[in-house]
Structure formats: structure tokens, C-alpha cells
Length: 364
Image 1 (tube, rainbow, N blue to C red):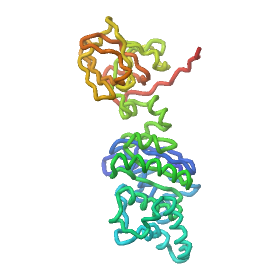
Image 2 (cartoon, rainbow, N blue to C red; image 1 turned 90 degrees about the horizontal axis):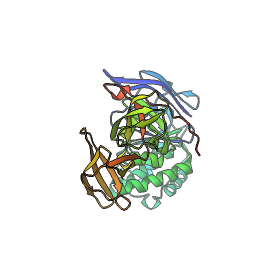
Image 3 (tube, rainbow, N blue to C red; image 1 turned 120 degrees about the vertical axis):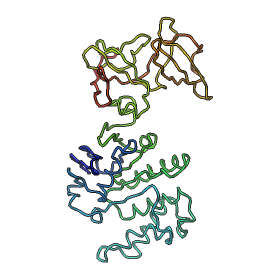
Image 4 (cartoon, rainbow, N blue to C red; image 1 turned 30 degrees about the vertical axis):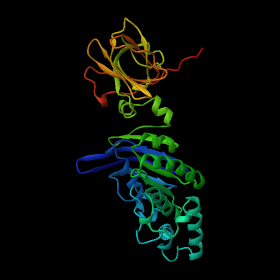
């Protein structure tokens, strides 16, 4: 188990980690997800022993890792750009971590060879064993890099944007393959990514980071449907922000039917409703202040633009085959399928908004 407590880190005047608390269970695969500058790679490097925090604790399996050097931590680290030895064959690259151990800890040659053979089979690259990195594709090189990291049977496996240098089709294939490898090895794995699809497809849990803080921890569905802060909502694509009034926990506004949005435990008054463009349905309503000003199709989706009488303009994405007939200039009511409500100040700021607890309702 990895336990990170109250961890901070600054580079000069810039605070990169602002009090990180995180527990990762043994055998768990966790993604650190966030935009550039959110602190996720710095956190990974501290776990690896490549950076040191200004304050905080790092305990792995009951040991204080901040008292250990990087070499003593038995970390498997896979970088975005492979970092393979170009003059070594695939077999020798995978064996490297075992063959350079101190003599007293080094397995015999036959043990190393057997371990490498097992990994070549697991990684499905046995036919590449005698090739050099320059003779491999990007996806193949990344498999070799993972094999080298796994060969030492690491206490923790760390991956920093492992598929970032590969094209989309190869990334999808390697994501499925990596998940299978993880299930077979049972290693405790932490990986960094800015790709939401990658994080949600691979990880048992996703840790969303922003500006050096953990904004939310949860599953794909939890983060997608119930963002914990305006930062997470925006990061998840909720680019539609509507001023609303809360009454009895319900979001209300002219031309808005928000019955599908869960009630919030909050005093009546002004608030903000965060919506994704693809989570809004439209219904004809002559009394609505929202009018269709533009529409276009990309074959699969219709991108509609609606404008309120007061000038606010929003995008709405509708599946082309199930979208209603839309007429330019006509009025439509917005019917969110899901959304998130946060408190609203007279001069709203991202850090002023706070998540509101959900009121449990009886279902009839």
C-alpha cells in the first residue's frame, strides 16, 4: 500500500503540490489525470525518488520511502519516450535491471534468462527477442520498456504518459493489453496521463489533479456524472455554464427543464449549472428565451448553437439520427440529461465555487 500524506512541493516561488493526501491499495491501478502543470508528474517523480518533497510523508508497505534512495525503492519506471539502450537487443534490455544488481543480490544467468523468456511471452514480443530498438515500432518499443520495468518485480510500477508518443489506434490497442498485463502481474501501478479516455479505460480509480491539488477521486462514472468542483466539470467538458436559481434544491431558469439534474442541499438563491453540450436535449417551446441561431452536421452529430434573448450563447451536440427537426430562429427549451450545480457569487471565481452535497430522494 502507498500512503501519501500532506505532501507539498515548490520550485522557487511556484507551488507545484499543495497538500496531497492519497492512499493506493496493493495491486491497484490508479491514474493521475489532469492538465499540464497540475503536479501529477512531480508527484510520480517523488514516489520514484527522482524528486523530494518540501514536506509530507510517503510510506509504502509500512516503510518510510523518503528515507530511501531511488535505488533502494525497487521502482519500475516507464517513460513516454522508452529510454531503451539502442546497442542492446530486446532480450538484453529486459534483462538489464537484473544483470546490474549487486553480486550478492543478482540472480544466476539461467534464472535471468528464464525470467526474460516469461516476460517476452507475457508481452507478446518473443519473436522480437534478438532485434535492436531501432528495428522496432513505437508500440513494440513501449512493450520492451514495460518488460524491463517488470523484470525487477517492482514494489511499485510507475508510468509517465506511457503512450503519449504513439498514434491513437496503437494507444487503444496498448491500453487493452496493459490492462491484461496488470491483471496477470497484480502489480501496484500508478500512471500519469492527460487523456481522459485512457485514464477511465485503464484505471481502477482516477485521481483528478488541478493546480497542485487533488480535485476528485473516483470511477469514470462518478467523475463524469458528478464532478466535485467547477474545475473538474470544465475538465470533463462541461463548457456550458448557466446562471440558475435554486429553489428547494432544484435548478430553475427561463427555458430550462432541469428535473433530471439531481437536487442539491443548498439554500435558495443564485447558483451555476454546469452542462456538457452532449448532455442537453432540446424541446420546441415558443415561450422559451433560447432560439436556434446555427446548426451543422458532421455526419454523426448535429452541433446546434442557441442564443438567449439576453445574448448568452451555448453549444448543444445532438445525435443526428435521433435529433428532433430543428428550425433556425425557432425557440427551444433546454432539458439537461445530467449536470452539476455549484454555488454562485456575485463575482464568480473558479476557486470560490464549492460542490454541494446531493439530497437523497425517494424513487417512486
